[in-house]
Length: 311
Ligand SMILES: Nc1ncnc2c1ncn2[C@@H]1O[C@H](COP(=O)(O)O)[C@@H](OP(=O)(O)O)[C@H]1O
Ligand SMILES: [Mg+2]
Ligand SMILES: [Mg+2]
Ligand SMILES: [Mg+2]
Image (tube, rainbow, N blue to C red; front, side, top):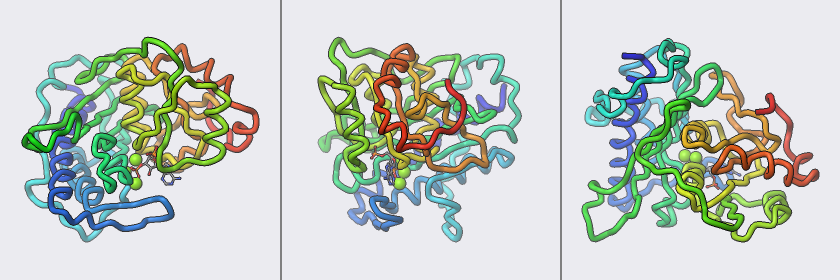
């Protein structure tokens, strides 16, 4: 059994536990909101869910490098029942592509966003929330685990029996979600809580038939995979590597593509800068990407630094 496969299997089990924590904090009625920076909130759910995922993965895979949005969380003990040792059986049944099967534990970089869409979580827009665990090898996003704790959420049913987990491995495919493409139009999804004149100018220049403003990088990529939008347009340095690693791998495994606004690959080595300085541009199908890249206005290109190599 390959190490990467066991790591992904553990992450699939751990995100479910993290999602449970996100629900427990919501139901406690005390979100424990902290302002990390302007337009950058953290809640007790972000802190505890990260502790759960990082403590679980680092216990079983101590040589893997793990980078989480909420930092080291020193002094905060993980409760015993937050440490997930289980490996998801469905992941273990798969056969990994040969280029990933032999990867050593120390060469895997894991990017954890314990709660993506924090702003929307605090505002009760619960379906925008995802838990993201992405894996990179050689700087490339190769696998992504995405849990949506409040998928199709209803207050009438047991909250802990709701939610869904999706995962994808580049070269293998996606599980837990069925890829589709929109029937017509030109539908762009973007931020609802971190907008800017540059973002709006870029979207306007693309002449969409519809703009869907929702929270979360994970949630927006799910809209692309499920055929609700053609492109995710975010020419801003606000998204970080933990926002895009898991969504990028899931999207690529489903047939789409995610790069920066210049079409350069986003790099996920352990020592990279955390912000995606070149912004984010993603499309539901890989062959749609060049068209959207061409439509980015020159003024928007010039507002964001050029890094990395072209896809
Ligand atoms: N200007 C900004 N400042 C801080 N974080 C930003 C940001 N723009 C985007 N992000 C982060 O990128 C993710 C997706 O943003 P959005 O929902 O606006 O599309 C969110 O992750 P988190 O909710 O995990 O912090 C959000 O905080
Ligand atoms: Mg955050
Ligand atoms: Mg995020
Ligand atoms: Mg987050």
